[in-house]
Image 1 (cartoon, rainbow, N blue to C red):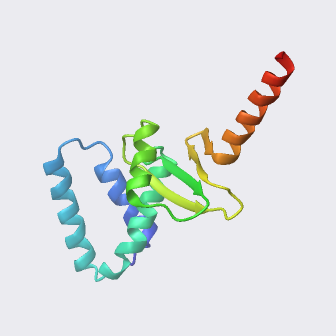
Image 2: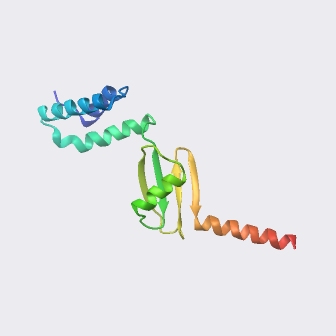
Image 3: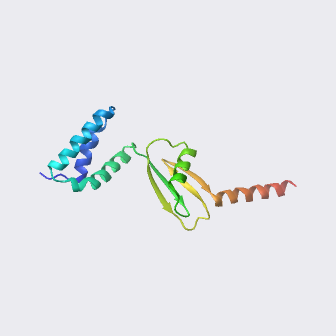
Length: 136
């Protein structure tokens, strides 16, 4: 019987789900790889991994962080953003480019949106200047 990538991913997820020992997880992964080889489906490994990540995300075990920026950002900047926001666990990181942005970034993590854009900073500065002028 042939299994789909989704079925392999679900089987792997159910097998690893409650394991805490890294040695046991390594053993499971080794056996899983042998199973893929035996079934002659090693070529499916990328689609199995993609399905596995989807399962993790659905179960909130691999949260997604979406960074929107005006242009490409380096891995060092990505790490700095995650560190600044205290996001220290494994996440699926997705970068979106928005050419309409002046600069800075938007970061969406779980249900929170962090606006670290230059446009927001300029708007805040403008508001402060207007308030200062009203006071005088």
